[in-house]
Amino acid sequence: MTLNLDSLDRRRFLRGTGVALALPIFGSASILNAASSTTGLGAAAKPQGEDDSPRDVKRLACFYFPDGVPMPLAEDPAYQDWSWFPHGNGTDFTYTKCMEVFQPLRDQITVLSGFSHPDVRQVHGHSNADQFLTAASTGSDGPYKNSISLDQVYANHVGDQTRFSSLVLSTDGGTGTPRGTHTMSFNRTGRAIPAEHRPKRVFDMLFVKRDADAARRLALSKSVLDDLLGDAKSLRRDLASDDRLRLDEYLDSVRQAEQHVEKAKRWVNTPLPNVETGDLDLDVSPEDPQRYVQTMFELIYLAFRTDSTRVATYQIGRENAFGISDRLARAVGFNLAHALSHETKQPGGWERFSTYCGFLNREFYRFASRLQDTPEPAGEGTMLDNTLLLLGSASSAFHLSQNYPVILAGGKSMGFKHGQFLNYAGSGAVGGSWDGKPEPWMREPTQDDQPLTQVFVTMLQQLGIETESFAGRTGGLSDLV
Image: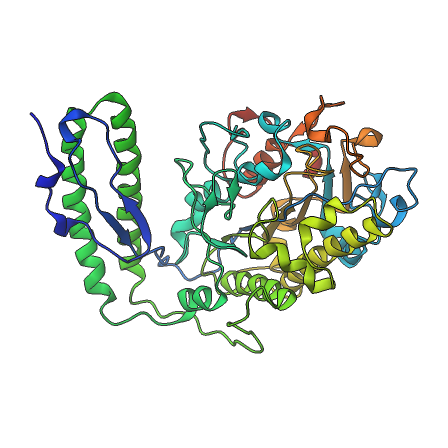
């Protein structure tokens, strides 16, 4: 049988509602002349539980910043004050001026050194944001394949308990490009999940009433998807093996959309939470960088506070000096953030770079403190006790994809013990200004990092997922619990 896709009813392809689906391009001779059509389904909602009694709520939020961190050598006068990593090890450590903002939350925070993803340790640091939460071998060029991100593993586990399975944010918005991502989140097929960057759009999605016609449109979407899934399945036997793989990915997207629609139907008549906007400026842009970053953190806080979702990511900036996020350094009186990492040889260079990183630390601290100051709505303790926070970057010293700077905070009710600097890099960590010679990422590693997947496995276990591995690597990190 030869099947032409033109025979498919084009009314079965919907437009303009949120979850992007596109019929893949096939190379099989029988359908070379077939047209394709784009659809979207607008329901990231999740069903509300029937039991309103207090629940064992566990949340996860992950944050990424680009360009690495200041790492002056120990003999440099700047080392004492302006190094990102603390001095010491275990519970016997001292924050630097770059990190001192965390002191009031010391017993809620663990700083990690000497961790990275083994498959990409010799890839340029600006190509690595894509794999920070996936540990995939995304490489530096050539064919690109990613895998599911940490947040989405947890979202798949807990997302059916809230209106939104996860909240995906970034300063630059969208997906970016392979190895130049604008999003931290990737679905179970490794496809980038677009990030929202407009505060008003985020607020409206979370808290502004939908139109009265939503239920009818959801019912129509479900009917159309049923037909579309049946039509698409009938293609499979007429496709070459490569095209079958593409079709399988497409069918997986359709099934996910089908699940989104079904869950959204159970939420459509549930009232949205009422929140006080206070001095929240929903029209703020990165042109007012400090207020913008604070607003994005506040939106995550409100989403968690109202139990609209229990999973969030925010990519604060993209790598390689592209995009509006590079201008966030203007929050502390500098021009472009990426340039600060290149100018550390200049007088005061380490201090300037550290001051910018200190700004990011301060906003993360402000968010964590907000959670710490809020009693847990669903149970005992504070929101921070029941929320696990991950902050980090996929490079450390100049473009080096090793020894990721990582902070883990919160989650005490999940068994995490903090007040630590887990310094697995020891005194052998690479640092210093770039001297014009081959960059650190181009050299053979002087020591082996620990797989960051150990941290991820322990995070997932304490979040309630029974697993011993992440991205094919087995084992957790007992020092965290």
